[in-house]
Image (tube, rainbow, N blue to C red; front, side):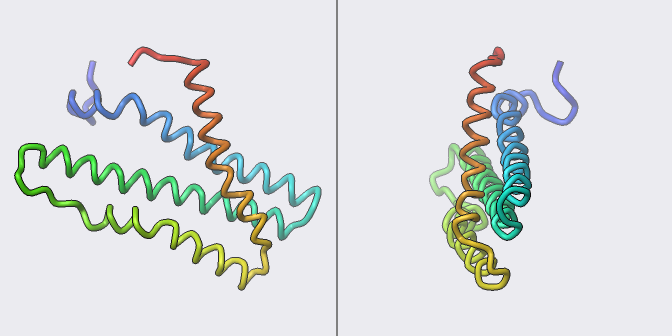
Length: 145
């Protein structure tokens, strides 16, 4: 039975990957906070804060990429039979500037709070770790899609 929130077509298109996207987003934050807490406890508060800041930036990067690609997908689906395709400006802005925004945030955190850049780079790796963990979960817990 289809839920009231989604049309049958939308639910069929979105259902397979939405749980994985949510899992990656959630795990990015969890890994970053856990690693940052461990680094705070065993090494340095500034280094631990940098790991958490990097994980937050990785989470923002993931959300911006997801939102931009969702916008492009919706636009391309809506314009499937059209001779002139228009790309949403917000989607293109997020795709084009997300790395620049992250670099600017890293620079600001480094200069204002004196947080080591290496710690923020390590925190950015939380997205990769979350993606690997989510992929392993999908392999070990397959569902019929």
